Length: 136
Image (cartoon, rainbow, N blue to C red; front, side, top):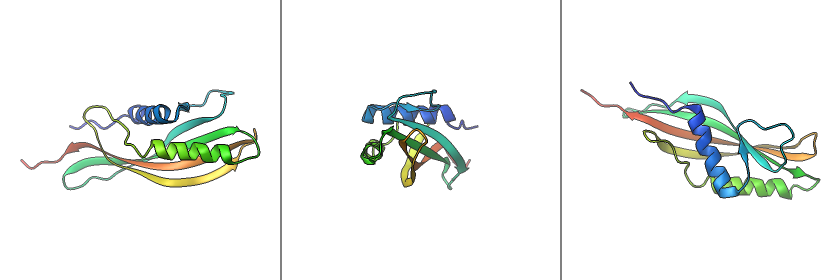
């Protein structure tokens, strides 16, 4: 029997990569009154993507970027650019799991929250292998 990656392990790997390369905090649950700027990552989907040789799943992750309050969009554009640059490098998974593909599916939306903070949502997909098939 093969062990699939835990969702907390995946989110932790994503958070670590973002924080290490941007210097900005990345939450999985945003604390009340958390100061901006920050990122927030959430897994919104998981689907099997097995091949003839591998057991693998594709995870869809939305990463929210929240800029400091203000009228200008420069802050949110900077956060988006930093995030995209950080995730050009593959995340590092625990032993026993292989990252097959890490795909940026682009900016899904940019809006202004009621706190006057610009808020962007970027979608990423991570294909992870957790075992190889073999004939006996």
